[in-house]
Image (cartoon, rainbow, N blue to C red; front, side, top):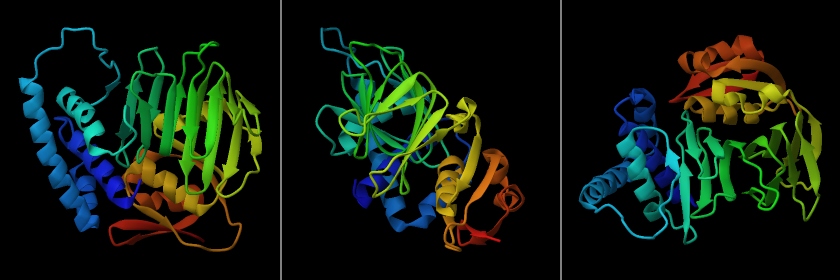
Length: 303
């Protein structure tokens, strides 16, 4: 998507969140509004669409015919979720017959599919679902945990950037960001690009393909770390600071940026994201980095 579409996606995600009576993170929402004049404009336009959608939903008759009714659902307030379902198709110019679900940085979202499979979205994530087909999805950006009900005759297929992933009875996590794509498997297996590299990644393994490279890096991972962000934890193993900043932004909703330092400098460590959100400076002790406030965001640099 272009920047305008991405801002509109974020605006819709915020409209859904702020429409939930339980929403309380007004500080982060205000920071997002003030970060760019286009944010407030997009949010105002989405708010008008939400109001129109609410009126349309209130006046709409209950369907009682043979048309298929989608059974996907999103967590959050019931009204907000219903509005999201109405707006997602109308606000994005995606392929006909598809729905794009987006989360704002700092939030997670659960999508339950008709076949019993689930997709949990991390913050700052966009995924495209094909209407009427629960066996295929496209990760546009961000990170998601997939718990798939396996069917040998109809395997689940995930498209992520240029890559195609096919499940083999699976719980797996996929992160698609500026650095490339990372796949981790905690149960079953995933075949990575069956028509290309045809690499099978089994439980307890991860695969990394860096942006701009066709080479695959394979390694071992504790299955408990796959999707651990859903429990509010992040683990870094010799990670570049730009990867750390991207992951922290996605998980906390705070804006982190990395300062380029020595080539090849990496950090390792495991942390809970809630304390970082409350006080980003705790990263200094946790990851042996320097952290300082810059405007409305936070800058991470090597010591």
